[in-house]
Length: 207
Image (cartoon, rainbow, N blue to C red; front, side, top):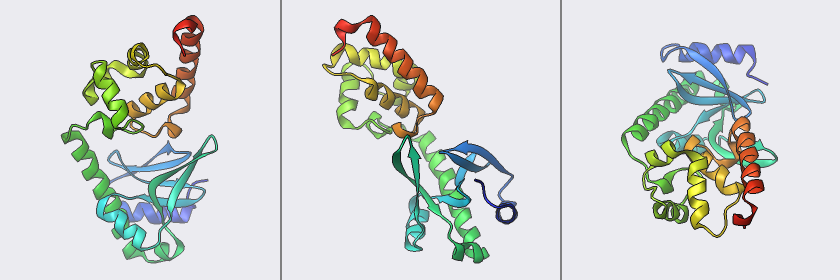
């Protein structure tokens, strides 16, 4: 369920100086974007603003609750904060917060483009998996993205005692930039089919 017509109109009016508001499916709800910057989500008729840096501190101080997304029964807490009734009534404060969510998300996008991440900084990876990737000749984020989840998984499979579907999905999530629990359904299903076929045709090499 999306925002009520009145609330969406209120939001649209408030962000008109930033640009045109667009919608897209996101985390089981509707993502709200301006200039391709995803700054908010609407789910179950509620609005959640993206929290980054200084904005997140203010949202927490105001008692705004985090958005919990349930994927296949697994709850995933995201850095989006609910706009409560009091904030809807406080138009000036609401649009200060909307503006903060937009500006900090845009800054985060720009910083991410400038700063080369380490593999361990990607979702689902961590230092141990980063070291294993180094051992198979993958040391940069761009190398992982170019190679893709399947080819990377096959490389790791030759060197690791244990590989499983969780590892494959974790790699795919790292490349997509999302937690494994919110991996797009179509991609998840395709990878699971591929993994089943792989195990079926190479049973002797799979633990």
